[in-house]
Each structure stands twice: as C-alpha cells, then as structure tokens.
Length: 269
Image 1: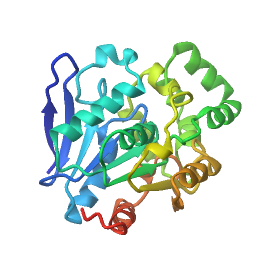
Image 2: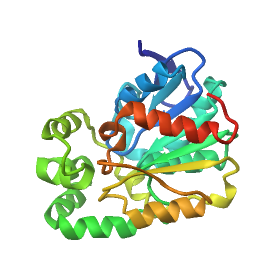
Image 3: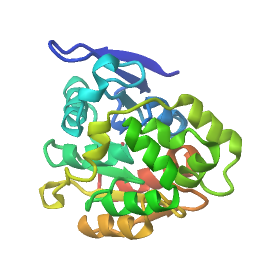
Image 4: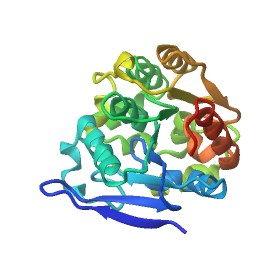
C-alpha cells in the first residue's frame, strides 16, 4: 500500500513523497502539470517485482506545500527538491524522470551520486525549443492562448489537442480525460527553462537509460535519439506510446525494461 511521508525543510516548502515498499531504491520525478500520482501504476509494478520506490511531489504540486508560490519556482528549485529527497532517504540510488522531470533528473545526476538515471520521454539535452515550435505550428491557437495566460495547463484544455500533444492515437479517450482531470498548473518560469537551462552530459557520472514513446509528438524521435547519443547509449522505445509513457505503457513491461537496464550495469534494486 502506498504511504506518504513529508520532508520538513526550514525556510522551504514541505515536500510530500509517496512511498511503496521498504527501503526505496528508485526515486520518480514527475513532469510539467503532473504530480507523483503519474507514477502509481509503475510503482505498483516495481513493488510486485520486489523493488521499493518513492515519488516526490515537487514544490507547489500535489500534496507538497508551496502552491501559492508555484510561479516563483524554477527548474533549479525542483532539482533542490529532488536532492532533499535523496538526503532524507539514503537508500535511493536510481532517479527516474518524465518529461520536465527528465531535465531535473539530468541536472540531479550531474550533481549527486547516483548509480543510474532513467529518462522517460525526457526534455532533451538540446532543450525543447525546436520541438516546442513544431507543436506550436500545429496548434497555433492553443499555444497562443497558453502564452497569453502564461499557463501550461491551458495547453491541455481541449481533449483533441491534449490527445494530439500527449497520447497515442489508439489511447482510449477515457485515459486522456483521466489525465486532464488530474493535471494541475505548473510554473511558467520552470517550463520555459526547458528551452534555456540545458544539462551537461559530460558532468553525469552514472549510466543513463533513455526511454521514449514510439509515437511521441511532444519530444520528437530526433530529440530522443540526440539525448541517447549524448549519453553514449541507445534509446529504448515503448510501442503504442506517445509522450505519456508512464500512463500508456504496460507498467509491468515498462518496469521490466527499466530493471533490466539498471541491472545490466551491476546495480541491483
């Protein structure tokens, strides 16, 4: 059963961390407009495989404090949140990030001792500018309204647009609606830093696994390949998945692929 622990930080927002299993070894970091809830199916699959996990609600997200100051937060603040969780839970040895959380994971891996990092449909090493322009050309009105309102949540206000940006064509609309109901606003500042605050792959000392959706429209195949190349690895693609791999992939299959990659280099969660 999922439990929730809170990390108190004097002068900083209190963080909520979902935990499944004893002595969690894998930390999950959610993406833009998401919360730790995005990881629950994968956490259960990991638990069934005997692996304990934790998933943080970044400041201003989910059950963590700081919602009133969300728009003041930047990517570096999210990295600090992840570092706080690592310090609080010393059994954590692997970090996994989705989308914006992938950028947080890359920066975290360049500054902390990790045994492995896993990037899922991650913001690429080259930043999101090229992919963002491509998406904006297809959904010009949506992107204009999101920009005027400085709202990432506005990108997904329409079911058809949300599915086009995030989901595979064959994903049931019920899954899209479930995501739309769970999503929340994110920091306009942090989201835009995916264009400017780029990771340095040479500073990352641990092995990196790159996983993409076979039909991801948000992070292109070319961007995923460039990220994998930067880390000296080959990308793994999940079939019948777009950007929302944590929700679209069979959690058992995704867990198996992740654990096989991690264990292949001698790490043994």
